[in-house]
Length: 132
Image (cartoon, rainbow, N blue to C red; front, side, top):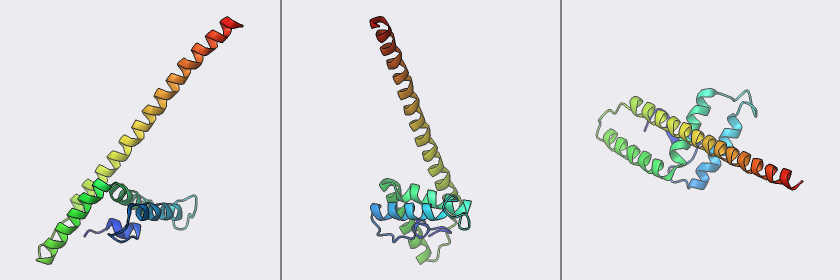
């Protein structure tokens, strides 16, 4: 479909299960991670791997991606040239934005928990001080 097909990036079949996709992502992430193997480490490969997993790891995103693949395959079958560079860049930007939002959401939850624990321990300490 595109210059970098997500299924090819993850080295899985388009019929792969979600578990197989997750397993392939983890295997390749471990293989390509600079801490594991500096000789195979490549920022572009890791970025493509992360984008592929962002799309294929989410069932709704995967469904949309598969529909786009079928549509582009049908167009190519009838000889229509399809420029996908913008589509790919848009998907990449969208996946990166979803990842950033998840990270921020996780940080907000963690900060909220820290504040709550701090208030709780402050209250407990005050009560203990009065008791002692």
